[in-house]
Length: 149
Image (tube, rainbow, N blue to C red):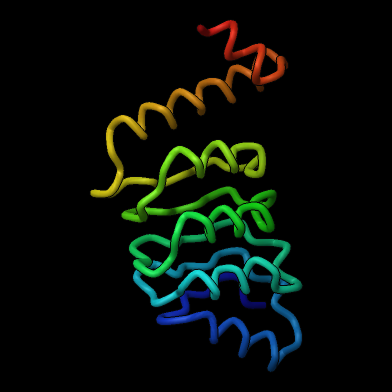
């Protein structure tokens, strides 16, 4: 069974695999780093059937994808992800405000790169601490925000 796939330039290898064998549910790791994947490819990947076991996805250095398509992908596939790599992808705090609750199993998030400004990283760290407190203290996020302030 195929568990890991690194398409070189596009989503086509996954579509071809699925069409040929009729199943892609065994895929747990997808590495699109430095590929030509674009926003439409990412949205197509998000809605592909039988992609329910993804654990790790790498979109690092993909110059053609935007934050909005990443948010869409996480909305559809985030609940199973343990690792997400967005190295050198321009992102804002909107990604985290929209996606923290959709990534309940996330253990590793790589957002390193030249696009990330220190202020954004501080906001992201602050939100991560709030979510950790929410988990530990079992309180709603709004309560944790008031408690920290």
